[in-house]
Amino acid sequence: MWFRSNRPNGYICGNYARHGKKACTAHTIKEDFLKETILYDIQKLVQEIDKEQFLKELETKSKKSKKDIQQKLDKLNKQMDVLKVRKRKFINMLADEKINQDKYLDMVEDNNNELAQLSEKKNEMITMLESEQVMDNNDKLKEELLHFLNFDDLTPEILHRLINRIEVKEDGTPIIHYRFAAPTFE
Image 1 (cartoon, rainbow, N blue to C red):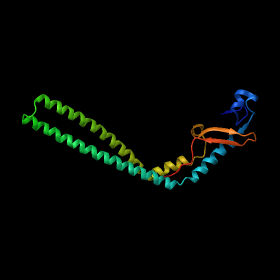
Image 2 (image 1 turned 180 degrees about the horizontal axis):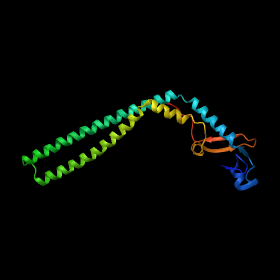
Image 3 (image 1 turned 45 degrees about the horizontal axis):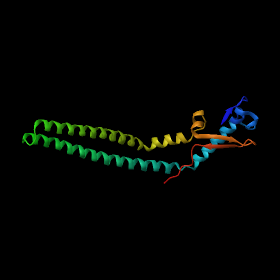
Image 4 (image 1 turned 120 degrees about the horizontal axis):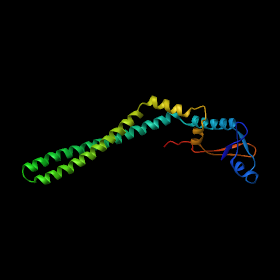
């Protein structure tokens, strides 16, 4: 853990700041040097990522997800059609006096409840399908990905998201422990 030192644009060792000489020596690092090192590391990682391959992977996963959602949606539609047919059969059973009015009302209520649940699931699936179609806009996706990967300034938010901790050797060399590892593609 590092603390901003009293010196302008620098950090000192957190152990030293909290516990003094007994815990650690007064390692320091200039903020500009630290930012340059981190930006270099991240830009090096970005260069190693095959962005086109990454986009193809995203597109493939999106297509598979859309297909799965569409299959589930088709299955829900079939189930709903079966329930609608069943509801008409209940009316025929009542008309043929195979069931009484109370039994008819119970069966229709159960059927309607099941239809309502399936309709709710169907709406969720449609929403999911629409969100997957947003992923199909490959140009926009590519632009957003490149914008995210090609930043030039390190904000405190970016630093906290990307870095777990920083150690500095006595010679001033930083050892940066990132919260991520280089991505791999299956």
